[in-house]
Structures are given as C-alpha cells and as structure tokens.
Length: 319
Image (cartoon, rainbow, N blue to C red):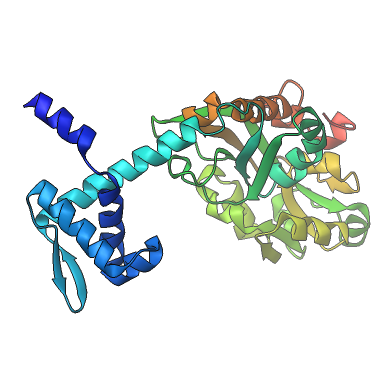
C-alpha cells in the first residue's frame, strides 16, 4: 500500500491542485481562467481530470458558479497546507547563492526606528551595500510566520515557539520641554503641578497602558493634554516650538539637546524585544541585520537602554 501511495505521489499532476485551489478560492471557473490566463473549457477539463484521478466529486457546478463538496473542502485544506509549504521552501532556498544580498523587512515602533536606528543606517549600508533594508514604523506587531515582516523591534515579548525572541533592554520615558516654555510657564516639581500646562502624548502610550504600571494612569488623570498624536515627529516638533511638555523616551534628549528633561521621576520603563524567525536567521543578510541591531541597541554602549535610567542631563552627549 505504501509503495502504491509513493508511485501515485510521484506521478500525480500537482498543477491540477493549483488550478483547483484557484477555482475554489474564486468560486468560479471563468474567474479562475482569467486569473490563470487559460480558457474556461481548459480549467473545467483539468478539474474533471483531478476528480477522475481522486475518484470523487470535488465541485458542484451551477449557473451561479461552483460549490465545494465535502471532499472538495477536505482537499482545499490540504491544498492550502501545500501552498504554505511551497512558500516556505521558496523563502528558505531563494537567494541561497547570494550571500549578504537581498531584501530584509524590519518593523519598529515610532521611536527606536526613526530616532535611534535610522541615524545609524549609513554605517550599516556602507558595510552591506547589497542588503535592501525596508524599515516600517508601526505600533502593531506583524505576523512574522506569514511573512508580514522579517524582524521586529517592539514591546511585545514573543510567545510562539516558532519565533526567536531576544530581550534587548528597557526604554525609559521622561517629561521634556524647552527652556523658553519652562521660563514662561514654570517648572513642575511633581505631577500635581501639571495643571494648566500643555502636555503632549503619543497615542501608542495609551495602547500600552498595561505596561506603564501606574505612570500613564496618573498622567492621564493629572495632565491636560493639548495634543494626542500617533506621530513622534509631530510631538517633538511641537515641543521644540515651545508648545508644551512631551512624554518622550530618554534617548530623544540626546538627539535634541534643546529639550530639557524635567526634574521628575521617569513616567515609565518598558522592556523591548527583537523577534525573528529561524528562516531569516539562516540567511546571511538576515544575520547581518540581526547583528547590527544587537550592536546598535546593546545597553553596554547604548546607555539609554540600561535597566536603570540614565538621565540625558547627567549623561552629557549620550551613547
């Protein structure tokens, strides 16, 4: 029996499965023919051949299109698994003879990507000119297993066993304002002094409230926010224009020395992670990006990401 199954697998026309999957997905022979670039009679004949080979009816034809039989639904599940395997095989094998060359898709939040990693990209590009790095800024975590990205730097610890997660460090959040703003409106000594101040908040912080302990809750209760935005650039621009007090990561103070960190405790400290798949780690270009990220975010050098807060006004020019 096993020998007969092996012979059948070796002689089976797998292209029929591809055609069947397209017909099942679109629910129409004519739509499948249009997508695949064939004719309706050819598509119909290939489905009939598949049904004959499997000795079962897969589709119910009607003037409205096609409907899957129970056997057709079962075959579609297997066909989808086969398509995933083919896609994974392509990803694993493609470009294997082109080391350190090709695309890598990195997703980060609105802070670390634009304000910490982007300024360090020229050195990476000089060292790896063949790597085409795509940097996407998003507060949502992409599905790495479905190829929505290759590597993420985000605040969520990976929970799926198929993913590799590395804890990178801690982001510390402080209140910043410009000296002219503080001269006009005063220096808050505690959160209770924020009444009457114009405060600026990133909406991503609200979505991360469970990671902020009581910091963001107290801030929301005691501060009157003049701006809530999904753009760190908008927050920083307004703050630089003497527009209010912004809650920002401590490393922003190194990038913008015009911003004065208020003499207050940190609002929050949140762990962040690098996550990737074994597939991307095995690719030389993937490992090159992973190594660059490790070096760029290493708390031994990048002191802003250490467990204990290093204040910008105490660290001088920073890391």
